[in-house]
Amino acid sequence: MKICVVGLGNIGFNLFAYLDQKFSGEVIGVDVNESRVKELRRQGYRVTTDYRALTGIDIWLMAPSTGNQGKNLFSALEHMIICPGALISIESTLPPGTMVRIREFLENRGFKLGTDIFLIHVPHRVMFGVDKTVCDTPRVMGAFTKECLKKGREFYFPLVPQLVEVSDVRVAELSKVVENVKRYVDVAFAQEIYGFCVSNGMSYEKLRMAVNSKNNVELLTTDWGIGGECLPKDMNFLRTVCPSALLEGAELADQGYRDRILKQVGISKEVWLRGISYKTGVKDLKHSRGVDLVRALEAAGNTVKVEDPLFSADELSEAGFNPINQQTVDSQNNEEDTARVILDRHKALEIKMWEKEQYDG
Ligand SMILES: NC(=O)c1ccc[n+]([C@@H]2O[C@H](COP(=O)([O-])OP(=O)(O)OC[C@H]3O[C@@H](n4cnc5c(N)ncnc54)[C@H](O)[C@@H]3O)[C@@H](O)[C@H]2O)c1
Image (tube, rainbow, N blue to C red):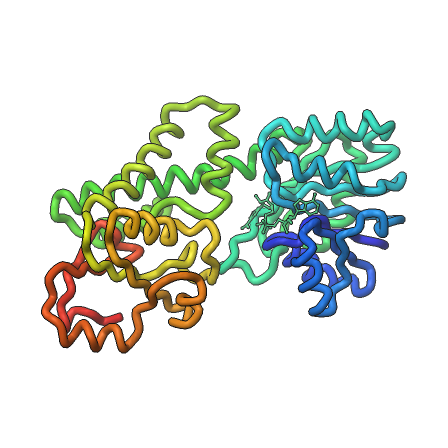
């Protein structure tokens, strides 16, 4: 069996490394990012940028970034040398309607699905920071034909805890997008209720504890805003095909919440911001609303210092931030405070003024 993982980013590389252990010597990876491939090769992985070197592949697992209207996926498909009998599994998140376009693409190249080649959609749903491996969650699989589903089942069934097969491939496509948009709406709701609590001098934490004591309810915590790559992108995918006042409202709520944080801080302050990774527990600054907030506060004339339990002061400096370190704390202790504020990622609307004994960072 020859397996190729297409796209070696967060998802693709983790998938590649996982399969490489299970099917030693049978897995190869491809990515268009030369520096990424060079680095992975240096670490000893069998990866390439050259699609022409990928011949006789039995199983293509596609996890590139989706790109506008699936652009990156189609670019990869253009370059792949597809052999008869191959299984092509699309693991990237798709704008609804993309699987039909992929089927047409393959049919235009003379392939008949279910006999010449087998096409399935098995959207990824890993939760980094929660799942141990990329194959820890139940997976949804959809296809256009029974034969494609069967071929997909043979590969995925032993790999994942549960395979949820759907005969309408559009359901598989939509399931991933809806999953993320549901989360988006839940967070936006939490932001609204948190804002209400702060405006009315009520404890949001106590409200959460009370509400969440019923086991079918989960009122979420809030952060700097709805970030990460996937949630805003997938909201956009869904809104494109499903006009909805609720979805529009959720986007407005998130924007309003982020504006309110900025407005509450104001201008010309020294701000200490606690927690900047894109989410708690994941050491990544890409698509972080914390980073957006730092830059917006600076643009408003504030001086911002940052700390995060996942990053050392040196790492924060290297990433272009002013770190809070013991030296900063000591110097603050010796100075008269005029306009220093402390912002905490899960209490972003509760601005605290600096007090020596209060700082427990
Ligand atoms: N990161 C997550 O938590 C997560 C979770 C579930 C689903 N997804 C979805 O999985 C897909 C990948 O996400 P990611 O976080 O790994 O993205 P990423 O940006 O970390 O990596 C994508 C990789 O794809 C490569 N790529 C782009 N075009 C290519 C092409 N034509 N051929 C080969 N490689 C190509 C890029 O160079 C990059 O290395 C996306 O559709 C995303 O929505 C991500």
